[in-house]
Length: 440
Ligand code: URA
Image 1 (cartoon, rainbow, N blue to C red):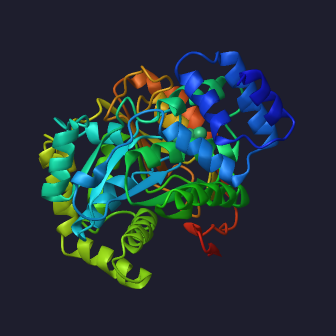
Image 2 (cartoon, rainbow, N blue to C red):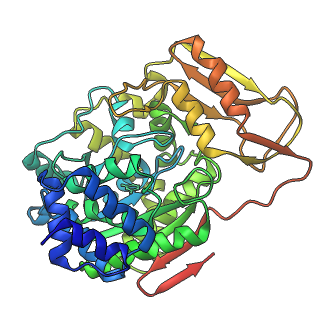
């Protein structure tokens, strides 16, 4: 077999078979297929697309390029969730303890933030002492004991994806549904859970900017999960505006704890209930309405907040900051950003707001950058809200006052004002399952 022929077949619109995909992907991981040939193949896939079965095969080959985590040592049904990434998206920290408090196991591997989007592992590490790297035996034992553990992704989970993603990033081949779907799903299949709920973000702060594109991506991922015998569904959720009010690591942990104590922002709370209910539904806990009621009860009874604390305590975290977020290390400086004019906030460029938080030190532009856990933004107004000129729009937090000017310029360039209250999209726009698409 020759890589040249595989590239030519895809260039001419052919469908690659399992042997050809294995030759290309495994050869690339082994260093036998050079970057330039894999780049050419990725571009051919980008331009020609892939058949559903071909995408499913590619995903499996990528998943099998490294460790396939066997979760059978953990009793019961294990449910995973994945978000395609957004600004202020702290849902994992809210919904995994809710689901675990309802008796469904969570053995989850999460990522770090990159670019304008945050990552669960960074947020967790803002709780002093928290370990996000556990040996496999400790990870399993914790889930068997308390029902939940969230840790960082192991280095050898889908290494083909890691290498292919790095190439896609520099060859203009990221925005391609079969490649995104196989990238995400290879990691989810390798991570081993029985059920997977996908949170596909849509809007100006998301990867997929339109609802139709997001639905197509969700359908591709659901088809892959289905093909590999997993119970899987996707919710398409709004990312035209940040989720909740807090953006930045410890700020977001504090907000997640607030939701679990019943005092979080309404938008975040609602999205979390819908996600948690859908995870419970996949795990067979009842009808969607029963699962929603179960999720609400887990919060109202305090069981979900206790579960969050149990997880952090088991992983070495100081849970006093969850009880009282004022105990989190504070940023040295804060600055209120006043509204430059009166009106209704009718739109926010969410990616820019995420970038403003990165400028304050809350995120990283390169993988090796360090982050400041206390830095970030707390919004006082969101899209749809009315403001008077001079009223606080947001408060910024940073370790260095010099960071404020550029962040403020970026933030204000993201906000648009109107005379009339805007019509906002629903928080959850659609649900995609193997049976079809339900639009809300
Ligand atoms: N997230 C991933 O893991 N892979 C992609 O290709 C895009 C988003």
